[in-house]
Every structure is written in C-alpha cells, then in structure tokens.
Length: 310
Ligand code: RUB
Image (cartoon, rainbow, N blue to C red):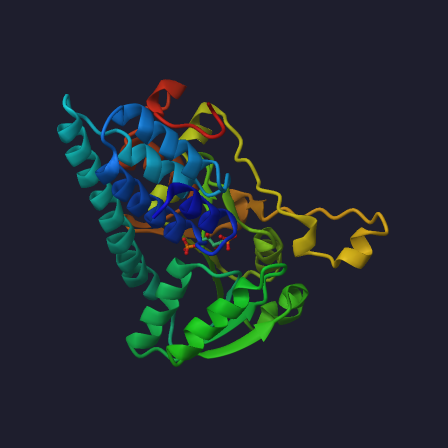
C-alpha cells in the first residue's frame, strides 16, 4: 500500500483504535521495507515519521515504530530481514496480548454482571466476549461516544456475539452508574505515573464510578505504556476538527468549537490495569516501562523515531 494512503487511513480514522493502528503501522512498515532498494535507513526513517505523525496520542503507534526501527544489520538485505522479523514479532505481540488480556480480564467479571464501557476498545470488547463465551450472563451499557459514535461499533460487536447491550448517551452515565457492577475501558496511553489517556469522556466515567464505588478497570497491552513519560514528557492530546462536532451553519456564526479526542484519568480513579503480564495496579506503570518495554529512561537517544521531529 502507498505510504501516504496508509497514513491517511489512520488520520481519517478508517483505521482506528490504539491496537489496530499499531498493528497496521507494523504491516505498512514491513511492506514498505520489502520495496526499498537503496538508502534503507533514510527511507525507513522517512516512512516511520509519516506514519507516526498521523495521530499523536496513542503511544502504541510510537512503540510499534520504535520496536521495528531498532533493527540491526550491515547490508541492506540484513537490515531488511531484521526489520521484517521485528515487524512480525510486533504483530504477534498485538495478537497474543489481546488474547491473554481477555483470559485474565474475564476472571474479574462475575455471572450476572452489568458492565459499562466507553468508546470502542477491541481489548475491552475481547474481555466481555470471553466472559460471555465461558458462560457468564452479562449485560453491557455502551456509551455512544460522541462525536464519532464509536459506541455504535461496540454495541454492534457485542450484540453480534450474543451479548445483551443497551446504548446510552454519554451524559447518562451518572444516571445509570448505580446499575453497574464494573466499568471496563481500553487505553490509548498509560503514563509512567499510572494515569490513563483514553477517549474523551473516559475521565467523567471514572469520576462517576469512583463516587458510586464501582470498580474501574482498564484493558491495556504493555505496548500502550509510554516510555517518553519517564523522561517527563507530557502526552499530546489530539484535537480534531470543529466539523466533527457542529454543523457548518453554527460554525459560520463564529461559534468556536473545542474537540479534544482524548482525556486524562488520574491513577487514583483506576482500580486495575489488565495487561498481558497480569492484572496490575496503576502504580506499577513505571516497572512495566522499564522491564517490559526495555527502556532505561535516561535520555531521548533511546528512541529512534520521535513525534514531529524532522
Ligand atoms: C479509541 C479509543 C480506545 C483505545 C483502545 O479512540 O479511545 O479506547 O484506542 O482501543 P479512536 P483498543 O476511536 O479515536 O481511535 O483496545 O482497540 O486498542
């Protein structure tokens, strides 16, 4: 696939969700590497940057690209084959991690539970589907997730799996939270101090859950933990176009729109992060970054490809 077309698919959200974006970028880089005939390092760096700068918030994309770009070799053929091997390894990581998270997360759901979820996380959906598959009777409340309505995707996926689903507007979460046994959401990024960055509205859901003493769980593969936050970097929250929120007639009146795609839920609102290496408290984020992602976290030199760098 042409690189610019691939980048546009991510930017326009035809390919969306942190895991899918990362896996797609790995596939695109692998395919691109197969075609490069000369200046391998420069060409791959250029391709990586084009992909990385499409959506700034999900660290899965950054981690995928940096994992793949740590290839070695002297000749172009050696480099290519190591890059392809690393890309395939990353794709396998995405697939196996989600399966493992579903197995671990399912155990936190009891028969008869009503679960609330926000947006569309393939990993959170995998947990709920798994609970259903092992015979637990569950019901799910899915928020619409304005402005892009990813909640419709969630509702459809769960319903097609045979699960009872009720769709609610985002602002109805507090009205229903007392009917809910637990909240499960996905993650775009987990920071070194255990905060969660996920679809806008997630932090309001967490606030409601905390007040109502409803457990709030996050499904996050370890490649969604951010090594850059160990160096003090803040996560850039993507702000999308006004047209996603308001019709042209309103915008033409000079009405301004703010449309951040994600928000930050502090670790104090999170009971558990379900990863492929276990169900952990948010306080363990630092250890995941150091031990699982292999970053020492002392300098920017560790990252081959960085956001918006030239
Ligand atoms: C999607 C979103 C999802 C996470 C996790 O946002 O916030 O909760 O990406 O998804 P968008 P997954 O629709 O803007 O990409 O578990 O599938 O990786």
